[in-house]
Image (tube, rainbow, N blue to C red; front, side):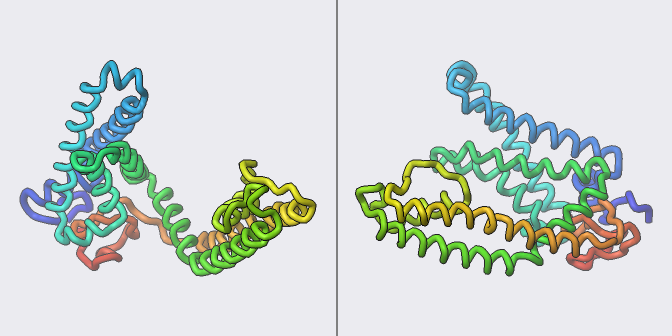
Amino acid sequence: MSLHEPAQPGLRGRLHTVIFEADTPVGKAFDVALLLAILASIVVVSLESVAPIRAAHGALLRQIEWGLTFAFTAEYLLRLLCVQKPLRYARSFFGLVDLLAILPTWLSLVFVGTHSLVVIRALRLLRVFRVFKLGHFVREADVLGRALLAARRKILVFLGAVLTLVFILGTLMYLVEGEESGFSSIPESVYWAIVTLTTVGYGDIAPVTVLGKFIASVVMIAGYAIIAVPTGIVGVELARASQPTTPVSTQACPACGRDGHAPDAAYCKYCGAALHG
């Protein structure tokens, strides 16, 4: 069986070819149209947030958005229909993104204000790497994901140490400065410590005593060193994950819908289903 022939017989196989396989002309045309619809939806939501435009064309913009939402909902249901393991696809990264892309508009019928969250649809633009056969970008994204996953324990330990430090510094500044200097509570002082340690420096709270200024100076200098730590952790893991790897293809699994397989792979590395029928 050819690589581009449907791995499932009948209608489901043809739907899978159109929706998931960007290597076929009809599949690529579908994905390009989908990307254009996503861009249009993001533009519509952005325009609707501008008060003068909303006042003049709000009804039209909402009609367009609902039309796109119906289209995206139908597309999501068809994706579930044409894979052999719909629950596995629904739990995958792109499956969750597809679901989150349509939920905000439907939730806006019940919860006011959730409509603007449809900008989550921008994540669906990541499909552009698969649509235009940019398999090396898929591989690099996999490298980045593996590096972040490998560094997660070190980063969690680092964040735990930083949170402990800012709590101690915030409490110390609360005792040194007091309420008359704006450090009205320990949580407020911890907020100051976070803003100062990260070198953001809003300036809404500032020490006035000599000891407080000395502590603030130490915190600001320490902030430069602390910020470099997670960069180094991720950098090391990126170097390890960037070792030569096997090229990947953009073919989607007919069972779970995930891609990123080796060009000569016969079975899906995620669910074990046959890739070529």
